[in-house]
Image (tube, rainbow, N blue to C red; front, side, top):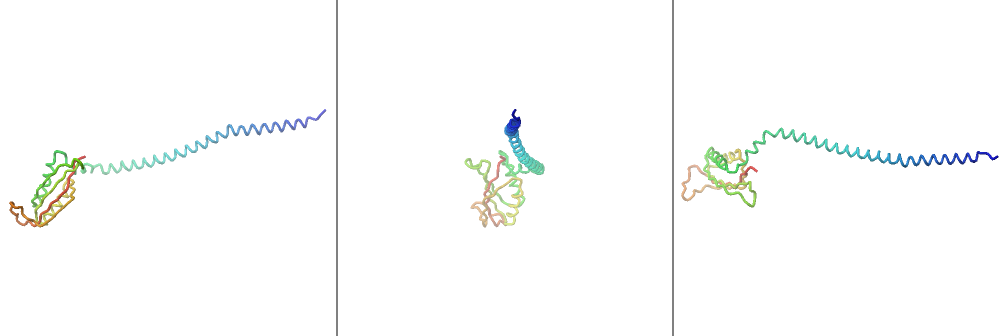
Length: 186
């Protein structure tokens, strides 16, 4: 009879090799995909964290914007009053006449027509003014204080010379032409 040991050794080696092969297969087919899935989930969690941080920053900006809006909300009505209502240009003219009267200034208002090709919300205006220099300066300050936004592009000041058929008022020392525009409510 032959000893069983050499066969037993072969069986042990085969069993060990089979166990190692099964373990490696188990690692390759079960743990490998699981490990890839864990790494994929880790990347997704990291990306979601970045997205949440962006949303948090946007939320903070939105909260700050809403807070700022609540702060300036009472003044929004003031900005609407700086525009001329279409068809209510008379209110603007009346306001400019009042400023001229308050500062003892002889004023002529010439209102143009909106430029069809250019800014349709802009109304060209020309003011011809005769007054003592001190009154003219106060008048300019009064125009600036008006509720309407008057954008003056050109201001020409010269020594007063009476029109051919108009008598020169007393104490008039300068003549000014103001070219500018006012704006309609958009």
